[in-house]
Image (cartoon, rainbow, N blue to C red; front, side, top):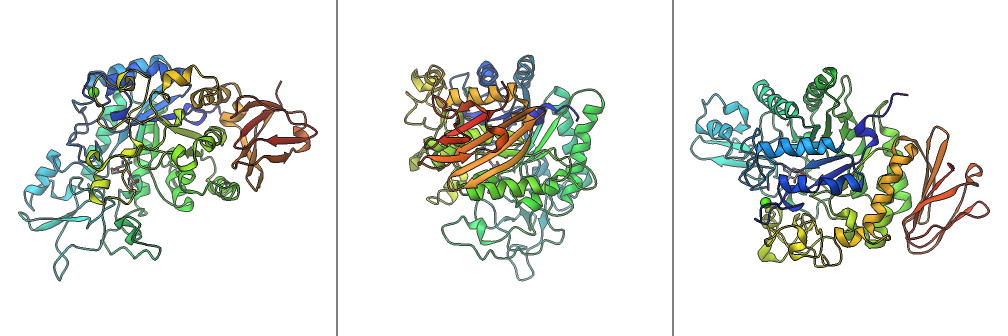
Length: 535
Ligand code: TEU
Ligand code: CA
């Protein structure tokens, strides 16, 4: 067997840059702030970080509206700060991934200004311009993910342009080879500086059906949902030609490996059902290394449904494809809010013991919950455009609580979003000193992955999924491990397979561990346990 690559055995930590650590007292997290906290990340035991966009931006969508792909927004720092972060992270053995936003630019990007200037602009075809429908109005029925028509009328040039997100985020035309070329240059710009890869924003959006047909209606739509859910995005996303685009990005990343400059990782942000997701691993040619798997976020927290999901995902993986798992991110409710504090511990054990690369969302290692944002303090355009539907993402983007000093050690000024109300007690300093804390549990789980390759790279087999019990086996070389998770508040009993009768507890989500007896493992309420055959 080939030795595992860093991105296979490792754990990725997602940083929402604005909220991790402020270094200059403006209440907004920045690059120097991350550099300052690298020792925290190294001690936590993660292997790589990916951070939300760092580029100059009008911040209509907090950096997902890029006005220059090859620079750093002054609010976040400078190119020199990136170099310093890379050097210091690498010195600690940590990899650094950037968020690459190829689907759309800011409407303030000079490319768009030029494209918009006239129908005969040499950059007109860099974006998606269309005439009105024959009877007038937008070219088709496509709806923006943030609500409203996805088409914006440009009076001066008499055409509409397409924006899958805000009108301040016009979509690039990825069918145009020149656009592909300049975006490849952007990737090389950062890879040459030493970044270890990219998380690629909305990869499945890059190519739209060539003739722009209407999207079909979604029969499951109810008014409680966001407006985007009126339609199924069958024509505006996930077109067959996107795989050629992904394959070229992968080939570009592979050039660095071939040149002896290390493996550069591509993670695709892709929200699709499993079968369609799998195609992003590549068909004739390799696609991205890791098509983001968000199924855990979207599946009911029940042993049966999780087992079905895990089995279906494992079974659908193409030969040689490496799995990955995510419990939360900057767009979705936090796991502690969705499952409650006790189950969040069990969920952490699941995330860090399934087969495949886990991505941990900053703050989840403290059990941080969603922070209700008073109407006057809402920042997220998604909430501002469709208020009160629970679509806002500010609650999951609040500042990291480091200690119980003013502003939780995040900043010397009032932070851009409020802190979690429980920050004086729920913070890194406090939890570092408590052996039973959520943070301590994460450190133990991450350490166990290093000392037990079966957890990081071992084979996987489901053992049991009944009632509130989910159990599976991990195996590597001579070691076999059992992970048993109680997803409920009543005790559960697991009959161990014969080979596991001599197993001893490696760790529990609770303070102490109880050994199995007579071939039976008794799990306490909300307890997860790892058993090992190794001495
Ligand atoms: O999000 C894409 C995505 O998940 C959207 O499809 C979704 O409708 C919305 O974010 C609510 O969950 C990526 C980024 O992660 C997000 O922060 C950006 O706002 C978006 O792309 C546009 O770049
Ligand atoms: Ca700052």
